Image 1: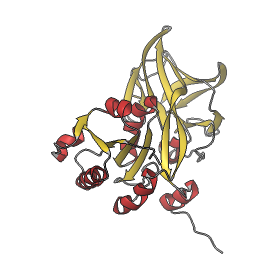
Image 2: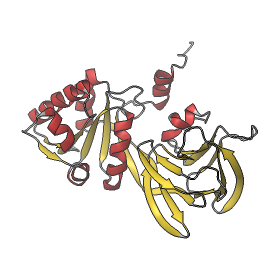
Image 3: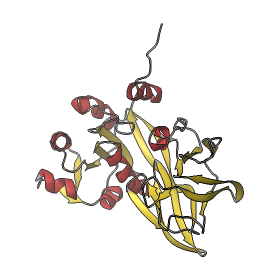
Image 4: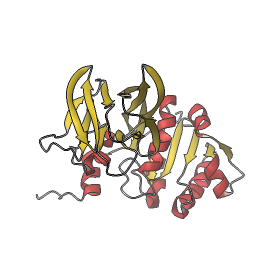
Length: 294
């Protein structure tokens, strides 16, 4: 029976001893089983591994059937924004803190990955958000986010004025430190810290969470995942510099008067898990929820 994966890409957490150790072990374990293994070039240089071909993320997306990310959720987010466009299967080995997306235990990766490589796995699709900055009707910049897109001032703790539209319909104006627009994947990240609800990954919905709003009656709101969300920065804003942050990793500059459009990307992350994966078990573990009473 033909196995589902033949070429595997390894992506890691830069300058992390534990991640590098796991990556080195993973490479020799996969190589011994006859898989073709490519290593992201920045990590290959750190490992000093000359046996494997060192490539960039785009090449891993083009040439591999499976990418294994060894690190934390931040490493998964960075890889996902690139790999999503190639529809490659992605799985994570946790060498970070929480590990909502990188859920395989690094001390037991052989047992879990062997079953996955034999075809025993579950697949879920996590959609991305495309974020665009428009100025005077012209597209100035764009990027994608797996977790969230955040409008905020260039200065820390600085209130800004903006309007929010859903599918072209005015919802409200806002005075706040900013606005978080999060996917279900991102609902357990920055959005959760700001008081937003947790959205299960199967939902087609986004949550808008104002950051420290001036109006106390303003609360998070969940909207349809296929809606286009528009944030219009006030021309009279006291902050001359605004920013849009994608997953806290990519920043797009914007100015008062700019229009920020946020909508579902045509690409999504094909995230895979070992058989028996349970999202609620992950929540209980990571958020320290109570266990069953009987």
